[in-house]
Length: 236
Image 1 (cartoon, one colour):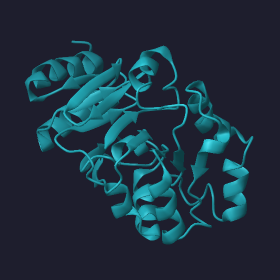
Image 2 (tube, helix red, strand yellow):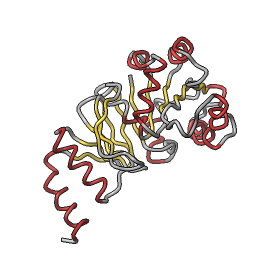
Image 3 (cartoon, helix red, strand yellow):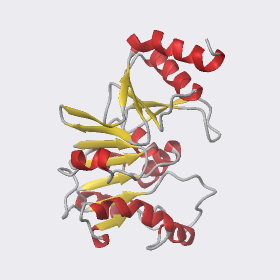
Image 4 (cartoon, helix red, strand yellow):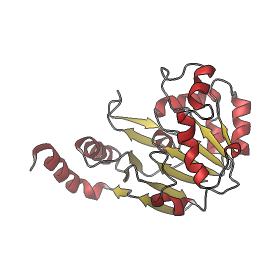
């Protein structure tokens, strides 16, 4: 399995394109799993098609970067939570070369994976697993959620495709992100990949590549983080 963890659908830009080109081919079969929305955004199959039907803004946002790699729309399939069942969803996974998990709410995404009963099918997948934001985080065994969008700072469990590190998505050098990273390092003791929106992570077996502006904090950086926190909070 190859894993690609990013923030938004901009992986066709210069910071990522050349690194991902060996993994996203013109003949790749893509399966998009848009399972990470909250229950107020989509409630039935009709609303799902209104959001993700061909030509809709959400459809275009997700499909557009794949077109830059020469992939045609007919090579892209979707999991529809309201119309697919375990058998159909598992069949789509088996036929795909790339699974793409969208961003949003990781707890909703994990719940829907369990509802469809496909969590083990994803774990057994041997192709490339991509994800933006929440779709990146759920690839980890455990991850933190930075306080925002009604979430308090918390830890959640993912699919366990990757382990040994945590990740700060949508990273910016501000109090919210610095505080979250410090807390993760103190509580979990694992390195934290800080990924700005033009950054991410590629893992292919033993090969690891930081993409774009991404970098890593570890426990040895805590003093530097404390200083950054004081500077941002108090101007010291």
